[in-house]
Structures are given as structure tokens and as C-alpha cells.
Image (cartoon, rainbow, N blue to C red):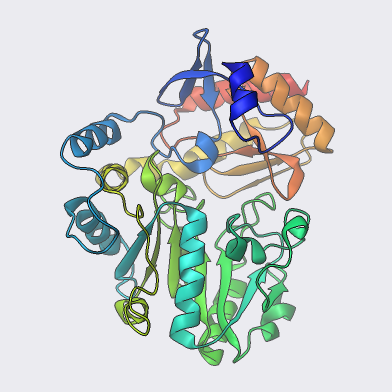
Length: 390
């Protein structure tokens, strides 16, 4: 199996973890030898309720037995899509009342960029340095520095960058800007939270110039930061919201959400201005609906996030740990350099704990467990990290 994995599965790096997974249960992954690994990164933020959550599994099985793909997105009335969009909009500010479902986060970014250009009639974008919004060419055009994109240039023109949390960059938002796109919490730079007054100033500058504000909560959404959506903590409402990862409960699902007046511009001049075959797949939407219902009906899951965050922070104290940055159950544990990160990850894996690093921060361990992780499991995971560091 390993030989065929390396031979026939396109590799994204020279050194994959290469665990052969046989099953998943709660916060654990299980390999073919029966060894259990506590998944401290939840599939990079995807498994918000853990692996094989009963409500999600039941919803997927029921929908798969009812119908799966029917026709390209937007033509038929499909109850999983309608119910999920209705429940989602009920959790959002009233101005975010229209949902376009996609297969992934990068597709949500692409759709939002097209929507911003169509609605404003403008072509330029402002993004933050060290942000990650996806790997397709439009989303990758937003990335700076160019380490991961230079080999694929030229990409989209008209992209300007500002520094996250830096007031000096606000004048780069002008009457030519279609949209400013920001992660509400910067993920791949190693967890950088915004100053509320800075994010509010960005919102005001967008209003002054007629630019739209796109907030990317592909990783930050679904309770990860202690509220269902991270923007709730900062006194701003975006014009377009991006969702994915935890939104699908383990199934491929993303979305961009806007007010109906904005979204309607994709329906004419030209008709079918943005289309997808598999976006909003009924089985994925059923999984997303079960996930969102669980989070809404069991508010203690999100309510416990801050307490669990505090436990991680109390326990992760070690001479090698230089900093711990966090936003709810989402942390960057900074060490000295990438070599120290590599052997710490390897030491954790050997002891049955899965962790990782960040795209633009090779000095920090990624922690983003399922929201269902218990205090006992947190204690054990922190003990493993400290043991690996020692």
C-alpha cells in the first residue's frame, strides 16, 4: 500500500506523514496496526466535531440512500441545500442572507472574487501579506510573499498588499478596489488576531471607497475561536463571508455568503455568471447541516472553547517554547526553528499525537483539535508535546 501510495498518488511534498489510516473515532485516528493517534489538528480544522460524529455519519448515510447528484448547482430545489442555507443565515447578521455553495475554500475565494468584480465593476483587490486563501490561480494571486507562487507566474494582476494590523496600509484601499480580502484571524502566519480597532478601520475605509469587505473564515469559522464566527468578536460585518473546512463536518463543502442584492449580479449579464457541477452536493450539505445543527443545539461545545484554550496555555510552558498565540481552540506554539519543529512533530507522532506546522511560519506547531476534545485529552496531548520537547 505504501509503495502504491508513493507511486500513484500525486505527492505534495517530499516527506508525507504516510500514516496508513484504517479508521477514525472522535478525536482519534487509527492506523492499520491498531495504533491510536490523537488528532490535534482535526484534519487542518476540518473535523470540528471529531471523526465519524454519529449525527454527521447518520445524515450522510441517510442522504446517500435518498439521492446524490441530480443536476448542476442551482437548477433543482434540493432540501439539504435549502435547509443548510436557511439555518446558516439564521445564525448570521440579516445582511448576510444569500449562500452560494462550493466544494472547497479556494472555490469560495474564487467565487467571491468574481462576485466582487461583478458587483463593483472594479478589478483590483487588496489582501494581507502572509495570508492564505487557497491554491487555485485566483486565490494564489492574493498570496505574498511569492515563495509558493513564483513558479506559477504570471497570476492575476491588480493585487495590492497591506500588513495585517498596520494602519499605514489603509490608504491602499481606493475607489479602484473591488474588495479587501482578509482572514479574520490570520492562520498560516502562525495565528495572528486583528486589533478590533484596525479591523473596524478597514470596514470604514471600505465603506468610504465603495469597496467590499471579504472575510475569510475558512479556518476560523464553526466555533473554532469561541464564537460560531470569529467576526462576531470584532464589531464588524463583512459584505462577503467565506466558509469551508469545518463547515462540511468532514465532507467537501465551502460557501461564500453575501446579501441577496449583491449575489443576484451573478445571475444575468451574463446568465450563469458563476456555475459549478458538484458545489453544494446533497450529501455534503447533509453533513454540513448535521454539523451546524449540532453546534447550535449543543451550545456548550462552543461555550467551552475558551476554557479549553486556557488549559492548553497553562500546560504549554517549557524552556523551548518561546510563545503561544491562540484564538480559541486554535494555537501556534513557537519554537526556535524549523528543525526543532520537525523533530518535535516526529516525536509527537511516535507517541501517538498528530500535529503540524504553518505554511508561512516554520517555527510554530499547529494546534486545532476537534471542539469535542476533553480536558483529559488536552492534558495528555500537552504532556506528549512537553515530553517530545524534552
